[in-house]
Length: 455
Image (cartoon, rainbow, N blue to C red; front, side, top):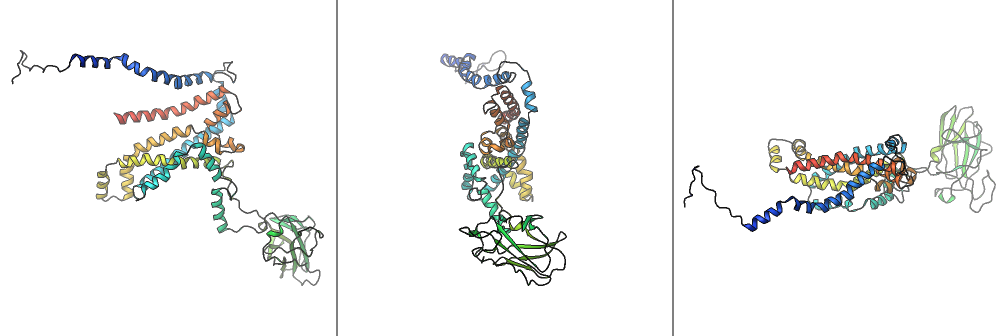
């Protein structure tokens, strides 16, 4: 079959297969009115739910608390001069710097590890599981984890256990002198009110300690000798001046009162510890080789120190790091999953070529894996930055009321100012606009990256 040629010498185009029905359908799809009809409901919904609140918040931020008086940028000036708001901004900076970095780093470590273990599915499940928990539930969980009482809080239970394994606690926490006649506070602990000379005996009564808590070897206290103390010796007794059922005379050893064994006693002269002794089961002690002069008998404070009770995790100094740790626990699985997906997309030929050329595993990771994975890491980091800028409920739940100002963040401050007792929607709207302006660059950055990847 030959194609007839025209005068131009070019072959005629084959006849169009487009039918009347096809032309009509294509024309309908290409009309702008059809696209507008489909986009109009979504556009109206977007305007009502997003554009209108943004515009109204900006306008409302230019008025006072009641919304009746126009004050211009007054709320923005207040925002940057108010100490509580400044603290919230400072905490947000800490969140943005620390939380996304730690989460991304842990996600990268977990993603790399899961490629080298057989039980990777179970590992990923355990790490990702906290993502299924709401911030409210996570806040309640970590309030219990950070409980001050080691018997309730897991964190302090671990720390106290490790501490007590290497450092023994005092036996007589909270014990104190009966009165100021024999012992007074001084130096590091309690010491005799009057100087003591060699050849003398001292009696040191203590209270403030439960008789049932005395060591098992404690026996009945024996009075210090009133005479016959040898030259160069100072003897004495330390006992619990309290007996069950009451009775007895204060400052005197009664039949039912026991000595306090294991106490450290020091002989101090001119501010220097000359000799040290330890009380026996009956509370008796003796210094046997003292030179002439006056001595102060001291019971060091280490005898009565309170046992180590752990760390105040939700105190003013550690509340923000403690909350960030809870956030990292929740979001490390999110970073791990995204980074693991990026790792699986890396061409294995590039990794094998580097190994064939003699590169070590660290060099392959640093020179090949990291550059190819950097776009994924950047997207994860920016997404986390957007997330932590809006952090609210975890801080609100975990931070006790007394230290909430130290843990405050912008989103929480916005709520407190507007609805949490401040009743100043003008300042709250200004905080909302400021928070929106902080989030906007990160959002635009992510959108641009997504468009570049699509192109």
